[in-house]
Length: 356
Image (tube, rainbow, N blue to C red; front, side, top):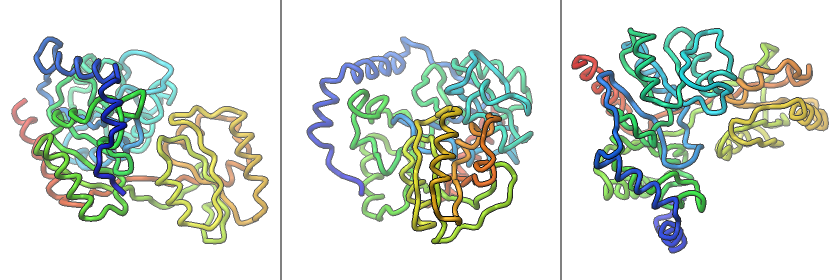
């Protein structure tokens, strides 16, 4: 349920929070040109958020990849959070996850040769090098770059989690916001994500609230879960209400995933790790112990694609885990005016590719 009141506590926290002053000052310096933003001739689409994690950037990025890659040479440029490397790297089919990070690795693995994936902390350098190394590139998707204002993207898509809308939250460290909700002014499109049960009244409230800040298109999306598949190529286990499931997850805000798995069966045990968690031998021992202690013979382990990429990096996964673990893929569905959303994206890339 989306709360409509801002709340005294949020107002107070934003006023006394030094971090809110710092981010506001930084944004003003970019707005007035005292800190330079680089504009590139190649079409650039930023997919980002104001909150820290959990809005669904990766599945929304993958949605755009699917939409664009058949018509345009598409590339994804990410910071590469959690990687054990620095600087610019253009991934190929042999690049390990540790070098580019779990989310870029997931995207590269999923789309194989269909797109280019690169990582670089400094997006300006990343775009310059990517367009030299992959001259065929016609559009670049900037993953999680909404606050990286050294690049002025041609199209900014801002994601807002419907279960944690920014108008109910506070700026760090009191809440999970990276900046104030006035950041909406930089967006060209807003997508309210994870909208499984939003009422029409709640959707209208979201539209009107955003419109007060900036009159831009507002879309709504929800997570769509695919069919389970075995992570290690073993036999796929059928799920029923009588199945006991051990859910292993290391993602931000796993609550929607937990609710989805709980809808599949009566008994779900959850092992939650931090977002981008790097699994260890002790973690696998914990997973094996919990799984073996489930008395029901009709049982399985479920994890996400993002977690699966990290699990696959290890050679010390127990046989019982390998034989039992399945992956639940996630993508997104645009709930309102999907054709309009797609047209905005395709028209932007088409027109700016022509003008390049």
